[in-house]
Image (tube, rainbow, N blue to C red):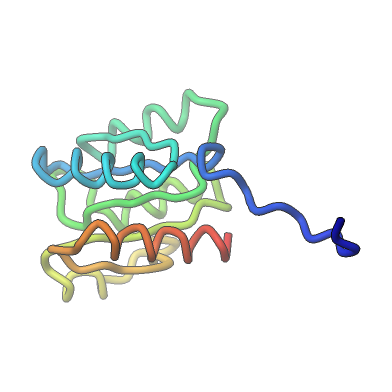
Length: 134
C-alpha cells in the first residue's frame, strides 16, 4: 500500500463536456471522439441551445468545446456567457479560421485553441491537458 495520499484523478465519466458546433458533420465526430475517450459529452447545435441547458441544469460542464464562427452568438461570446453561470468552466475554441479568435470579448478568452481540421488524438490530448489543469 502506498504511503502517500495523492488525490485520485477525477474519473473521466464524471467530467461533463459541452460540445457546441453548428456544423452537423463536425459536432458528432467531436462528441464521438470524446465519448470514446471516456468522457460524458453533451452536444449542441448552437450557443443558444447550450446556454438554455446550462441555465436549467444543476450539472455543470467542466469543459466547453466550441466552434468560433456560428450563426447568432459566436464561440467567444458563448464562453463569456458560460463563465457568468459557471466561472470554473474551462474552454477550448475550435475554428477553421484561426485569426478570428484574437477578437477580444470580455471574459471570452478561451483556455486553449485548436485549428480545424484536427485528428481525434490531438483533440483528446488537449482535452486531457485542460482537465489536468482544471
